[in-house]
Length: 300
Image (cartoon, rainbow, N blue to C red; front, side, top):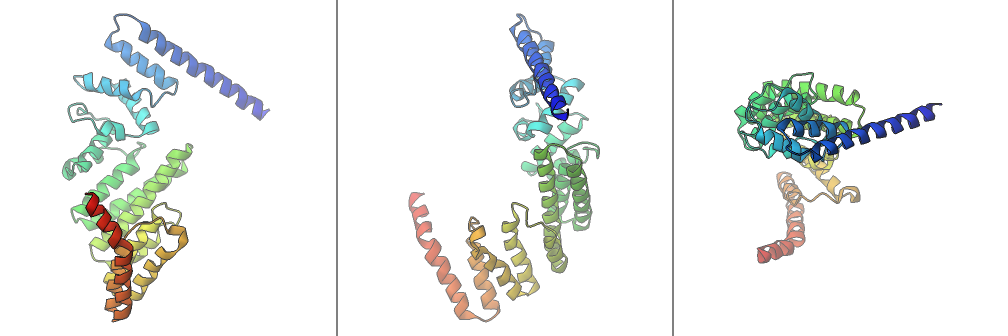
């Protein structure tokens, strides 16, 4: 019985999507199209599920809107951004991303300003994203990152904690698996950000504990071992530093490319007065990277 209901739902959904697509095509075929016609086409395409296909039309609508997007178009932008991401809209300039109280415009402008290192502007727009919006956990990550860069570590740590909590909550309530994975990745970024804030504030013991909160299932966990090793180095725990770095010899993470691992290896051996081991680490570095480096220089 359940399978029949699912089959019926799929048929009805397909018919509904096809009807929306046909309506959009009919509107497009009209002569003397007005601005309202293009908005109607955008809505019908979104209703049919063509989220990626509608992006160029939506960007053109944003470009041509003299006083900013209408409320219904902002809702469409919100839905499309939720399904395809905001990266394509971040390339638009400030004139096209006109001032708006909507959360999605504020979030896009926050990301755009952050990438251009306009941190005060980025923080202002990220702060406008309310807690009931899907982009709130990502906005918290932007805010916390800016506070860390501005050396406001205590405030940054509190914001990272909010980010972790909000990301986990959003992930648990998300039915789309790709969106859930993105929230889980955002949680991991906030955990690492918290550890980095402690590290920047020279609170190495707390940074060490914060790094341990990162799940080994996180796709960037292998890269974080190098950061953890530097944290142990500044704690003066050189044996632990070497223990972290030896993990890179595992065949399971041989995809990680970081020549500075050998440099930190050599530093750690020197701190332990193991000069022969330090020399071997240096020799290994030159034997592995000298010829490729010469080839790159020749090519350049």
